[in-house]
Length: 330
Image 1 (tube, rainbow, N blue to C red):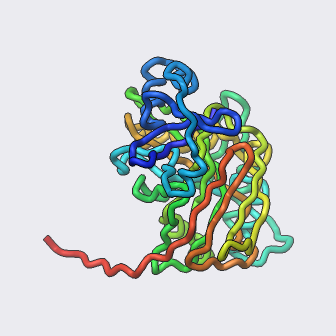
Image 2: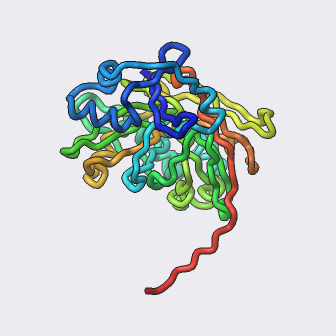
Image 3: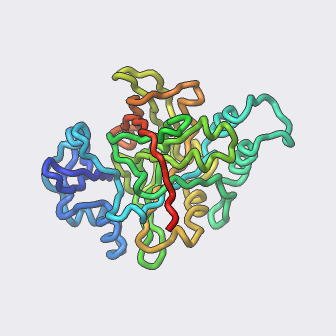
């Protein structure tokens, strides 16, 4: 089952469920988070809660998308309780892309491998542990709180000081922490883990800075398990013309880590198991337009699609005006 959050023409929140090629209103429901908490309380599944509440009239989600009325597939009234995080070097081929950013790589000896390639090899060797065992931890990064979460169709804002504004087509796992601190996975969605690759290339220790950018997630939320093989397309449009596109792969068949291993190494920290908090955790990619020499411009549109996830994730790029920050002593 796929779910979408949106507002109707009068600004009222709704949740719609995909039924074949169309969407229907989930009765008596205003948010996916509401469904998640109802499922936790009932010790049930979100699909069962949706079935119990029932589906109503058809909703024209495509029209709502065109009118800018789609919401991220998860949100809450207090964005400080949403954590945006991710992992890198998790996909087969991702190390080659990263390594090429950091140096011109040829055949190298073990002692001269970059840290990126070493981390990638660690994942290849122990990123898919046997059941009951713990695998190696991945690269991890923080992007921000819910104030940086951008809805489908909305502009991705790049700060004026940024050196680059590049897309990263990924899959995000979406989680809520239950009343007793137990994590629950709500589902999966497409994500654009927007980053500054020029800044990162200066020195890999700038990775933390390069990730402090907005991201976009959605439009559709897939309930249940992530398919093992996800195949999609990432593209950039300029004035309605495609200037770059490339296939991307995800799912465990195309990864050096299992989803369970990535989840464990994020949620093992008690700070990320605070009751009521929401986590949007992105699992990485091996496909970047930056690696092909593309430099985006203000107004370009990022589009990420995969048949499994239904509607594409589409966001225009907007460069913010310079902001002068003044610190006042109290």
